[in-house]
Length: 326
Ligand code: PMP
Image 1 (cartoon, protein in one colour):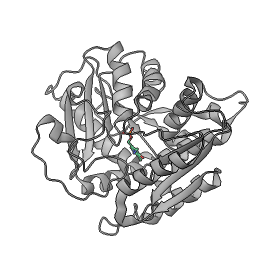
Image 2 (cartoon, rainbow, N blue to C red; image 1 turned 135 degrees about the horizontal axis):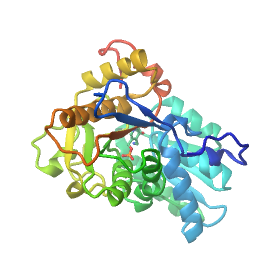
Image 3 (spheres, protein in one colour; image 1 turned 90 degrees about the vertical axis):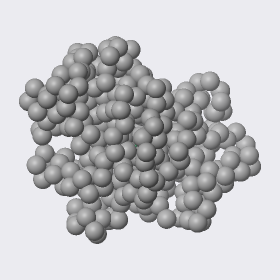
Image 4 (tube, rainbow, N blue to C red; image 1 turned 180 degrees about the vertical axis):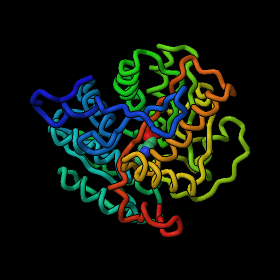
């Protein structure tokens, strides 16, 4: 693993090769490891797809040199694209519904991107529509469309998967991750399963989200506070393949909130809610394996901690559950 001891030419050289750190609460005989994605320059896992997708689109000619990426996004993906676009002489425009985190919009602007707000009542649908209209109006613009673009999952097949495999000498028994676009889960676990054919794959979602319906689970749609994962669309993300996934677990917001606080207080991990949900699901898989309820090809469970709690402090992540805005 690169340890970045040598001088690097560009901030883009610091995307990926993030640390893989043991979760201390796991059973001794089935360790859990989490990949700490806040170590990326834009401080989240989405830097990987920002860099990979912009590079691939430039290489294939889909995005002309000096062109523009226009993406409807509420957060980390915009920051990831903005980091890459700024260094690769590409313009970036993000269409963000008004209600989304002001901090994230400030970061996108600071990185040189334009941010256009759409009315909250038009939802993400309104932002998507406006992004396509803008791309039509601008010369040389593309909408990367992280929810349907296979390059999203490919970024993880090419980077996250191999990094985990190498760090653990191929001895991975299960990969566990929450799904927003499902790019992380699908791309990483596809790579790992190409190395270990009976790898156990677990998708994670907050209770109220509908990924589990793709496996026939009877779920009620509801609001949830956990940020970055889950879907209200019963058809889910186009990248998600339920056949590939062994199980889908729902985590309650209350438990996620408590785990966020436990990870900080007991493990020194300042991670956000999707990471806490992943931690609980990964610990559950490890405990089931330790109890002999499931068979893993290797006694080792891996997950990702997608970003840091610092990005959400104003939402009260470390206060009481009732005060947490999610
Ligand atoms: N956690 C956070 C904080 C995120 O922003 C995202 C992306 N929406 C995810 C997890 C899920 O990643 P993916 O889109 O690859 O499923």
